[in-house]
Length: 273
Image (cartoon, rainbow, N blue to C red; front, side):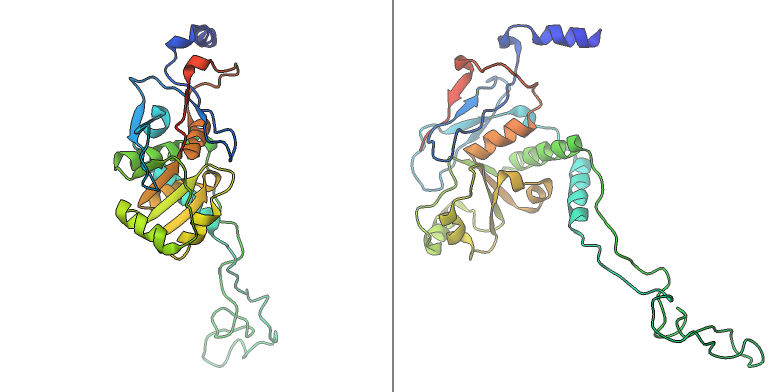
C-alpha cells in the first residue's frame, strides 16, 4: 500500500518536486555546462570565488540542500574516518612462534634435582632469543561499512565545511603558467595558503596548477573521484570547481533518479569563464 502511495505521489506534475539530480559537465573542453535548477526556497547559495582574480558574471551558485545542508552527525564522521584509516594499515607485522625459531629441541636441564624452575628447549617464550607468545601475525585490518553510511558521511562533511565557512567554489581549477611564485602570491591574497585541498571535477587535474603548487606546503590537488570523508575532515579548507559540485550532487543527491529526459525549463546554464 505504501509503495502504491509513493508511486502515485511521484507521478504528479514535476512542479511538485523540490529537488532534482545534477547534470555533470559535458566534457573537459566545453566552456558551458548544464546543472539542474533547485527550488529557490530550499537551495543553498554560496558566493563564487575567482582563482584568477577576474570578475564573475554570476556571483553565486545554487547548491543541492540534500548534499550541502545535511544535519551534522559527528558519529558518522568518526565511523567513516576510522573505516578509511583502517584500510590504510598494512598489517604486515610478523613475529616468530617457538615452532619457527631456529635452535635445538634439547631440554636445557633436568626436570628435577636442580632446585630451579622447569625448562624445556631454548625456543621457549620465557627465554631470551626464544619465540614470541601471542605475537602479531599478518592480518587484514580493513573493516566493513555500508555504502549508504559512507555517502551520508560525505554529505555531513560537506555540510560541516559549508557551515564553518571553509568551503569554496570556483568556476575552474586552472592556472595560466607553471611558476610557483605567481600561484603563491594569488593564494596569499585569497588566504588559501595553508591547509587547502583543491578538488577538480574535470577528467584530469590541470597539470599547470599541479606543477606550480607541488612545492607549496599545505596544498593538495585531487580529482573528485579520489575524495573521501577523511580528506574533508583533515583539510582546513576545501575548494571545489563547478564540475566537481555537479558530480558530487549527482552521486550524493537524495532525490529519486529521474529516467526521463530533463525539461529545458529546469536546466540552467552554468557560467562560462
